Length: 533
Image 1: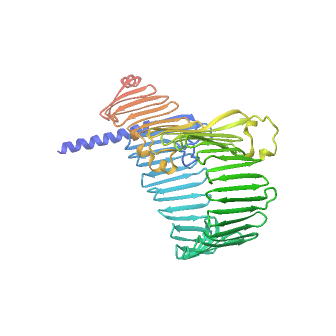
Image 2: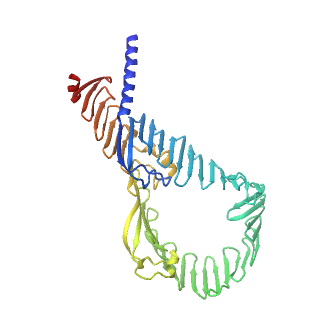
Image 3: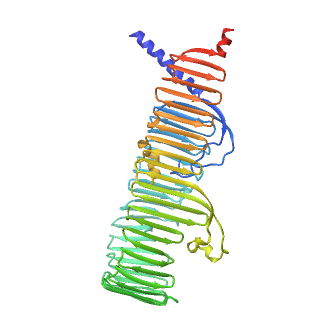
């Protein structure tokens, strides 16, 4: 028994010594562009302009149990019991580490953004531009300036409690439905209520709106504005010099008179039978609204016959729907199409220096491509170029284009993403549609059985969280099948080991030896001849 214990102890020391030797040997120097920083939280790499410098690579690979891959002075990636623990550092001081699924931390030095997740989606904490957003279940807290402890903030336990401090430094508190005051609530500057919906009051700019038994009784006043209603019996909305609106037994009767110069006229709807609009710039007729609509004006023609099955628009907006079979809509350089709604859709966006296209077949396929473009100016730039929404891109055809990023997913099998010259491949990818950044940080590695990424000159392949792994960096190449076999090759050396040194081979320039039982080495070649001398 004692002999077995001594033997196992000696064997353990030999194995550990072999691991340490492998780590010391797995060092290579080479010249190449360095690791890049994270530009976006949903992209773990991005292209960075770095000058060539000498790199030192250190690697210790124990499969999914432990893996350390370091590029000295530039970055590192460490995992332990993958995918549960992972740590990544980048040359510009960006960092990421996670104990999945309990906790993850990411810091993007490029835009000074910090994100922490605890058992996401239960707890999240984000700091960006000196603002901090914290969420714990239904508790929310937004600090508008983390550098000033007296700054305004807003907190809530939605939808029951709301409290905070406004920009004037005054505190507020509200408990729903009992009463209180809330700042910046539902589009208003300030809201106050008592036993909601019994009484509530909203202030937006110079306008004040008072409600009793909301939404039944309301009175709103402000510069040039007067509104009141006893819903659904009668309501009136007067906006001085613009319109006068009324309803009686809403939604049965609604009408409006327009006073704006160039658009003077009237409109009414007797729901659900008939309606019409007659103004200086528009003529509209409804039959059984909203099913049939015929609108004609100088900038826009619109026909529903019947809605939503056939829709046609021509003018600033262009639209043709045969819903749910097929449809297309275009406005301000953005075109959206659908096929067999809601299963398939396509989006094509044009901007002066960018084109972005996407297509999805829910939930099986998603594609997105973003291109940087150069356009030929075929007409003189004029006032229309100042408003992107009115820019006619047919006058400025593309003469050069370069794909800046691409994303492809075939659910649940495969995903591919590329940013500039860097890219990653993942198998499997179980989340339908484009993955959320929080899922990437906390859960995606659990179902990723194979991954490949290219980061500058670094290529890495991982199968079953490190059971098989391959990496290459110019002349440096390493491969392993845990725990059976591993090898490393670089410019001046080549080594391989079976069971981490039970049997192995090592060549350093002209020096060669064979390893046996972790500690015994047999030199041969030039070194053997020197030893004989």
